[in-house]
Length: 243
Image (spheres, rainbow, N blue to C red):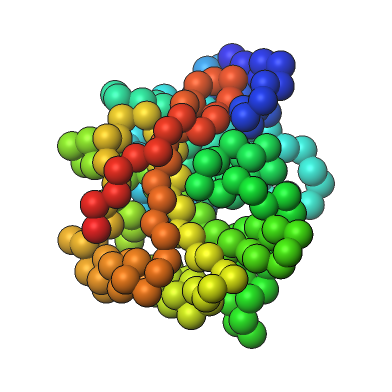
């Protein structure tokens, strides 16, 4: 069974055609075996380096996209898993695409007023930022986007595994804050059952402390959730942040 994406809609990032299946197992971080509706078991690329706590239980319904590029080692990509409270997007490339598109459409109030949107910009010798938004006068806003799939009791949490790289991003953002430069840490919750965002101090206390320190240094912390269905994904609303 496959589902074709609906017609494009402003603010919606449509999925490619999706095939439904059942998760058999996730392993070696980047692989997942999935039983398709026709009974075949295929190995899909898992584009998520985290633990995916609570989002990789065998037997859950999942949705894959198919890419037949000859250079790909795995033709299938795992896009979503159906959890009891919501579909959950597991592809960590989606948040960057969605936030970049929304910034170009001036669809995020906190990031509006910057007509130039650049992606994957080097800001230091060994540090890139997901987005740089620039005004004609030269003022800019640096935005780092993180994918959040862990929700516990209505609270979205990041990270779901210890992340030294994530802490380095926070430090780089804090160093760049100035009169003409804003720095924003944006957590995109790729599911619909969260009411608030808070760092996962029990998972990575250093990251939680780093986020609080970055906020004290002037880094703005935003969290948004999404509306997600089998046609596509779009921003839904801003979530309260509790540091």
